[in-house]
Image (cartoon, rainbow, N blue to C red; front, side):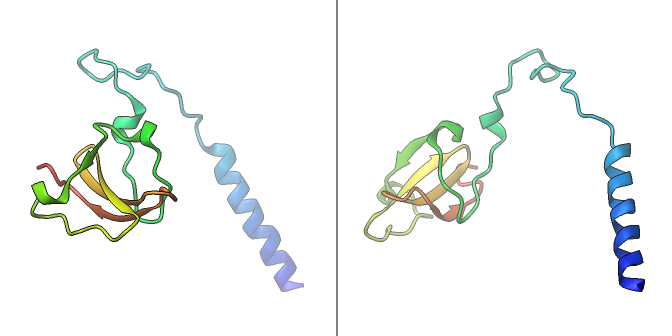
Length: 106
């Protein structure tokens, strides 16, 4: 009986918080303080294990590890790509992010 009452109370608490949450609105219509359009891709940070999507990668380009001291030799079937300021090691066929070098270009 105590478990049932605890479950009911927990459900009531969780659902009341969701009901009280204010709806989110985008009042700035995708513009920053200077009136310039900000794309959603500029804010996406890829993480290890995530599927790489080129359309979400700002400043996308393939990187040559010979030109950059911080990049190791990629294993067979992998390649280094740039996404924003980060370097990502992705599987060439699977597209899964294997490693992330944050703030690579800074």
